[in-house]
Length: 77
Image 1 (tube, rainbow, N blue to C red):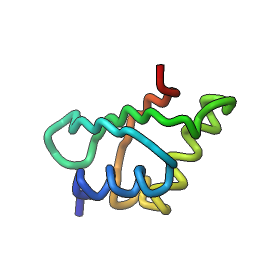
Image 2: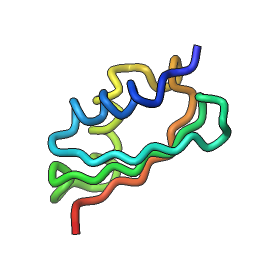
Image 3: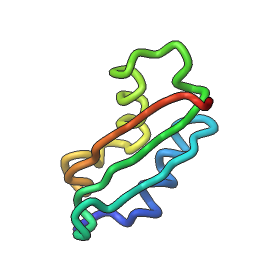
């Protein structure tokens, strides 16, 4: 069963301090999303570490309930 978009946003906001999250359903099927995540928590982290922080916030749902997530991460400003 696909994950609810609001649940995805909530998990990311809970797991990434001060995150602003914009989520787009890419295929209209609830299985393929793009998330733009902006947070000061990414300051000084490599892109890989930023993405790992977001994936950790999803608590193991990637590849299961959440099939595909394209990520764009950055700091404010």
